Length: 251
Ligand code: NDP
Ligand code: 8X3
Figure 1 (cartoon, rainbow, N blue to C red):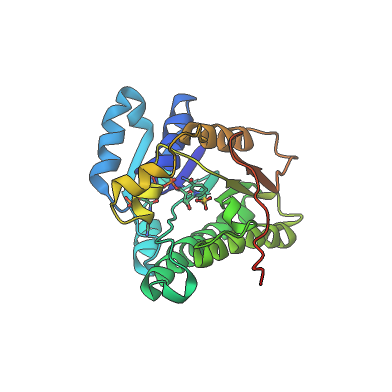
Figure 2 (spheres, helix red, strand yellow):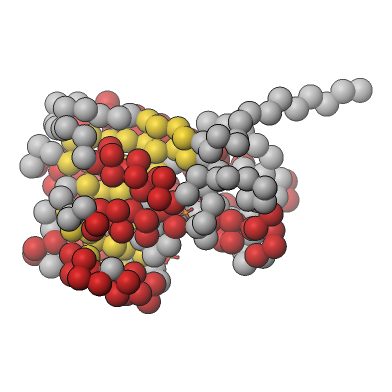
């Protein structure tokens, strides 16, 4: 298989690159931080020869065009697109949130994902085969304080995936949304709290969260299922995570 992973420079994306390479597949690893992609390639040793690191900013239309135009011929017959690049910025209530943060999340988690998908679809439909794995979140279905636009971007990812299923019926092209809950060991909370390491670490204190490897294993399982099976949606949480009561303001 040839797999394209966005957001491959850390966290889930990096773990996915490792997982697919370790099982003998080829991977195009895309992200903005080129040096991290090259470090990953070096760390993979001989397997790194099956990895193509490419700079890509999914929030930038021109970067996406340049990415696809620049792919070498032998790296164009992509089987699986994993739309993993994404981020949360801030946890402030909506009335205090930074509008630029909101726009960055929409540009990355939604516009970027949609553009990558639209660019790949003619290829997948033309060859009657292909798989799109989108990385959503439990924040797309469970409201919590401060999730405002981040959660909404992930709800978009879920419904977009299901609507892809509706449009792609009969084409042989599959689509899945993986919606994880609390997952540690990635840069997610460092990015959300803008480099405040103490705040980021507190999120996982006293928990046994999911790991990036858990998500990579799930993506790998979906990608290696027989082609007549489409997993529409998977929601996964660590055992230590559950649901709380709805908030009620009492007089
Ligand atoms: P990380 O911050 O570790 O990884 C995010 C990746 O996305 C990085 O490789 C980053 O690379 C890349 N990225 C961010 N913006 C862009 C952009 N504009 N263009 C291209 N790449 C970009 O976080 P995670 O691995 O935890 O998160 C991966 C995905 O999983 C995200 O979509 C996140 O919302 C989702 N998720 C995370 C959960 C968690 O608890 N960790 C739970 C549920 C979902 P670079 O900066 O080099 O571009
Ligand atoms: C990341 C999981 O619960 O922080 O999408 O929103 S959560």
